[in-house]
Image 1 (cartoon, rainbow, N blue to C red):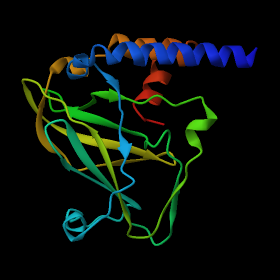
Image 2: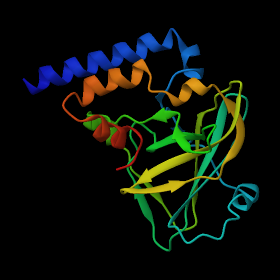
Image 3: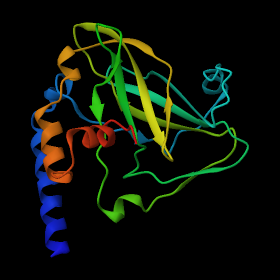
Length: 203
């Protein structure tokens, strides 16, 4: 029964993702899943290292910059004295994008979905002390000028990147049909608040 249930969940998920590929323009207007990718070919250099100017004692530091019209580059640095082991999900870190609303409050414009498939977590990344890894993530466009930042969750602790001036559509702040579909698939019995905490990386 568990196998059948899992296959049903997987088919529904694939149907949603496949359907969405035919209307990708909705990414600019709808709240949707973050699709960051760890760049395995990334190598830090003096320019990248200079981006980490903040004198913070956090064990993890996050910096972002605009890569091109459609992507942000995200750099994650191990600022501790020990190696850190990360277990990505399908070559992704648990990260979402937030933006400032008109009343100057940070609000998610993406959400995160945890995979139920064990195959999603086979890869492990060991980050040495002072080492930097690189990711890329979607950059949006719109007519509302604001600031964005990235929110990273590692071992139940949240880390925030610097902010960047950009523009998005205000509709990105609203919970979309996609949000509710994923909620129905993965967490039909959880409360709205519980789902928010999971999707928006509050826990």
